[in-house]
Length: 217
Ligand code: PRP
Image 1 (cartoon, rainbow, N blue to C red):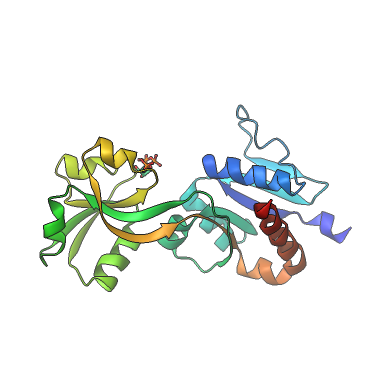
Image 2: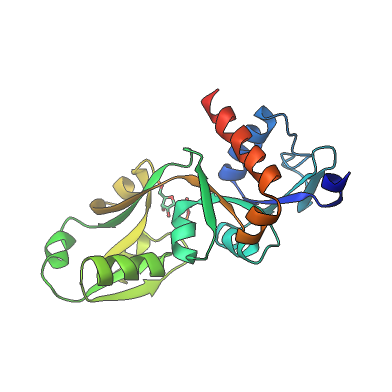
């Protein structure tokens, strides 16, 4: 009875990751209560029988919901986790949503990257870029924050290079750009609120174990 009172709340990243994750939950026997319906404008979906509710949020907001405890669990890309840099437990690598965080640009920017001169970097990930260039590479950079279509920046002269995720590489190829340096591999991860992990340890651990098992099937 106690379990039914407080559902475990799961924040999913809107889009492809949510679709894959809801499929995984279905495999665990946990139906998404209509969250997969493409026409719905509903934001939150409750499976009362299982004591679980899902909601869909923009990627960068998922760690925020989990950090503040509005969601117990989040499913989000490692890129977003690194960028938001909040205190969360990362408990499972789901293995999908695979891509690479890379420094990209025209081939001609390779020399500049090694010249010691200030490099202009456009990115959706200013914190990851700062940490990579300033801490790991001790390179002076000017970081320009953009929201999307990052590949445009070096083409129109806004920046020398970009830091962005590369999945198939086709956006780079079609725009005459290339990977200059690889920063780290990315995939979808399950994150858990630190207090929820203590208060709801049994239910959360069981759920994570179910997901882990379903990944093997
Ligand atoms: C992402 C990323 C790249 C592209 C990489 O953009 O920012 O632009 O996908 O994928 P690829 O290597 O398979 O071509 P997204 O489609 O999320 O849109 P955005 O540019 O609006 O961020």
